Image (cartoon, rainbow, N blue to C red; front, top):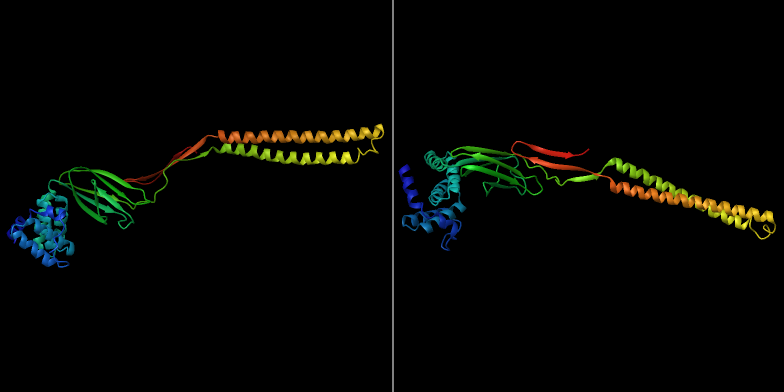
Length: 312
């Protein structure tokens, strides 16, 4: 049985590259994986490997059967597409329905993996919307457990999704070694830009000055209105023509007018002082130093959290 399988692999191995570069010919039956696979075998026996590989690839699209997978994997391996070939051999080897075929597939997978590293990625939330996973520079399909083959060396894993904190990790993988990445569920993205606010002591001082300015302005209005009322009352009462005819009446009129003027001067002084307090409040507010708070999400292979730094 093994000899037959190896013989089949030799016949089919040369033309997988065309299966990825060339579209399926128009005479390929639609929806009949068995017929397409049989065409591929016949073409391979006739030495038409380019067309045969097109049939194998098309048949596997329609029916991901283990027999088709073995033939396609062998083609990929002979064309240098070892990562995809290993994935197909590994899939067949994990299915115990045909022990002989599974054993052969495992031998082929192990032979490919001998000089390379096996990467296992376990995702905490593989169904996360928009999740994208890149391993060693190429995209892989998200799943609860991902098994990939990579060249030896430093292997970087990046998992990202819209509105989530990206996960990044790098591990060194030696030839023939197995390296595992455990990716937690990606947390919601927090604005990492630093936020700042003015120092509270300055704000309190500015607020106090502004409050005093407001009270002073209100007082100046009250005093000013009182002075205006006194002025009009003095003019209408004490300064009537029949009252200032003599010297005493004139003196009373002059005194009341002067008193109203003094109150008006006080109102003006209070208004000026209040305006100065308002200006001081603005100056203190603008001069207040800022306190910066930095929020930094943390997501690594060993940590998941939020870093907060700043002056408090």
